[in-house]
Image 1: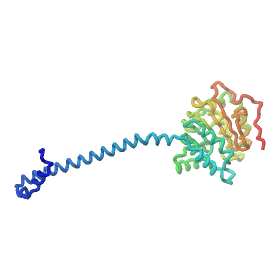
Image 2: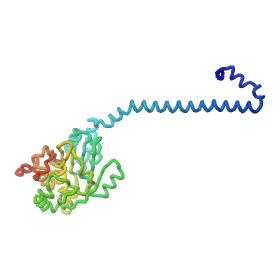
Image 3: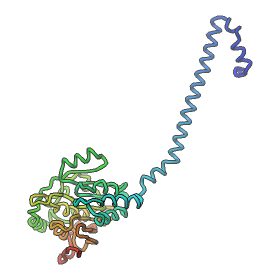
Image 4: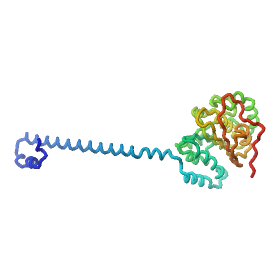
Length: 313
C-alpha cells in the first residue's frame, strides 16, 4: 500500500494485461477505485464546510461589533437637520413648523438611549418622531381605532393603540371642577392609572404602557375640536400623572403640548402641568419639565396663584 500513489503503480493498474484478468480482479479494481473516490469526496466536503464555518466565524468576530455599534449610534446631526427641514416645508396648517419641531427634536436627541417617547395623536409627524427617536421606544395613542389599525397594518414598525375618550370639550369646566374635588382620591397626581376611576384618566391602554417610565410625552391629539369632540383634557391630565408617577429612570419628564394657544390646552396645562414647570413656549407649543413626586403628594402645582399667559408676539 505504500506505493499506491506513485506513478509506477498507477501505470501497472491501467496496463491492458489487467483488463484480461478474471472477474474477481475487476471487482477488486472497481471497489478500490470507489473507495478512493468516496474518500476524495468526503475530504472535499469536510474541507469546504470547515472553510465556510471559519470564514463566517471570522466575519462575525470582525464585523458584528462594528455593525452593532453602528445600529446603536445616534442619528448624525446632518440627518436630523435634513428630516426637520423637509418635515417643516409645507403650507398645510395641520403640520408643525420648524420652531415647533426643533425643541422636541432637541430633547429626543439629548435623551438617554433608549428613550421612551409617548405621543398622543397619529399626525403628519408620526414617521418623523419614530425616526428621531432612533433606537428608542415610541408609542402612539389615537382616538380613531380604524386609523390606528390601518397605520399598524401598513407600517408594522409603528406602535399604535386606540383609546375611547369619554370626555367632551363642552364639559371642560365641569370635568376640571370634579377633578379638583377628587384630587386626594381618584384624581390624585401620583397613581396607577390602570385602576383609576377619575373621569379624566385614560385607563384603557395596554397594561405595559402604565409600567413604562416615559422620558418624553407629546400631547398632539385628539384632533376633534368641536363641542362634542373629546378634547385634550384627558391626554394632558394623563401626561401629568404619568410623569409624576415614574418609578425609575430619569426622575424628570419632558411634556410638550401642541396647539398651546387653544382654550383647553392652556387651561388644562395650567391646572395639571403647572406654570412653574413651563421652561419654554411659543404660541403653538408649550414645553414643561415635570419631576417625579412622592406618592403621598396631593397637589399638582406648587403655586396656584400663577397663571399661564400667552407669549408676547
